[in-house]
Image (cartoon, rainbow, N blue to C red; front, side):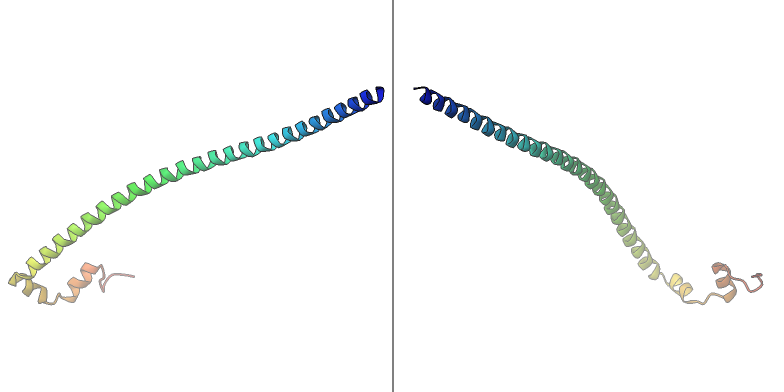
Length: 120
């Protein structure tokens, strides 16, 4: 009977040892998973920060685009007005005659900032 008790005791000790080893392996596995989760959370926070930065940049770019679009619209409107004004001036005979006359060379040079007697 003592051999049976010793056998049972050894089996129980081996079983407890095995359970301890398995428990330790599960704890290590859980620690590795916890480390992975911590790393993933840090990556998510970094990506969320990057997303927020990109959203702010997009909003700034949208504001610039809106300003430039308004500016382009104003320039197109001004261009149409100038084109209309030029057409109106071309229809006036006196303006057309004046535009067809040649400007004297001295006046042309004076308007351009060039004169022959100016020292270089």
